[in-house]
Each structure stands twice: as C-alpha cells, then as structure tokens.
Amino acid sequence: MALIIAARFDTFEEAEQAAAALMEKGVSGDELHTFFVNPAGWHDRYPLGGDRAADPNSKGAPATAVAGAALVGIVGAVLGGALTWLLSAPALFIVGGIAVGAYVGSLAGAMYSLGRPRQRGRFEEARAKATEGRRAGVLLAVHTTPENQAEIADLLRRAGGKEVERAHGRWSQGRWEDFDPTRSPHPQQ
Image (cartoon, rainbow, N blue to C red):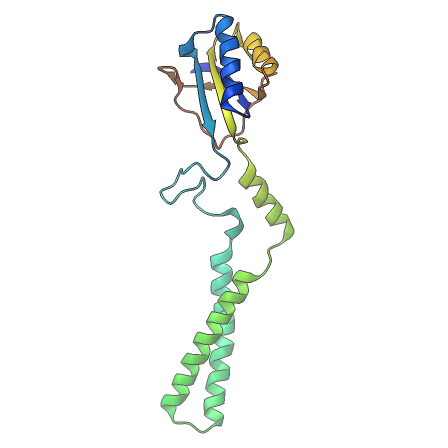
C-alpha cells in the first residue's frame, strides 16, 4: 500500500497552486492527483444513485406500515361487517362490507404509520450517519514516502489545504485508485 497525504481545497485553482508549490520542492507530477469529491449522498455507488442502499430515516418503516395496516384493517373489517349486518344486508354484502372496511382501514393504517414522527434520538443518529465521510471539495492527493510525509503535510497546510490527512491506498499511473469518498479522513498530525 502506498502512503498518501491529501488535503481538501475549495477550488481547483487553490489545489493547482499547491501542486505547483509541491513541484517546486521536487515532487513529481506523477505523484500528484487532483480530483473533486462530491457531497455526501452523491457518489452513485448504487444503480439508482446515492451512497447507501436505504435512507437511514426509513429504518423500521415497512414493519410499522404492515403493523398499522393490519391493526386498523381489522378494525375496519369489524366495523364494515357490523354496519352491513345491522342494515340486514345479504351475506354477500356483509362479505363486501368487511372487504371494503379492511381495505380502507389498512390504507389508513399504512398512511398513519408512515407519516408519524420518529423518535428524536433515531433522527439525530441517522443525520450523523448521513453526513459522515468527507466534505465536498477539491482533493489534492500526494504519493509520498514516510520520510517526506511531515514536509508534504506542512506544505499543503501552508498552501491553504484543509483537513490534511494521511492514508494508505493503491497508487497507479498518477492516481489514487482505491479512494473511497464515503470514508472519513484520518487527520495527519
């Protein structure tokens, strides 16, 4: 695994100026990789887009919808059956009344359970998970040696680099090949 020191910049211009400063100090252009990191959730890691298979806020929603639909559906079926029985309707109408009551009750139960607010703790936890990873911006990655890592990190900071980090990854043909935008950076000391 290659040793990589990287820093986030607000613009490509700032990253290019930092790269020029590094090249003045003897760093080869093949040891520099500049690229843009999209905001969290925009990395298209799944065929339908996004970084996760499911929205963190939707945890438990299907089970809650089924339970709510079943409970209110049973109440709707009982009310529908009782109403048609009280009206002295034929057996076919009673079965139809039960079916309509169950359908309307299950629909109401599903809508109620999906629309109710979640516990605050779960929401805050989901928000934290959704924003973990990296901040959006231009990343300048430098393939370096352990002897030069402190000097490279210092140069990146002086050039305006934010969140200077140390990473190990696969470096090939002037690129950080296995970069994962969903992982949080490990700060360079």
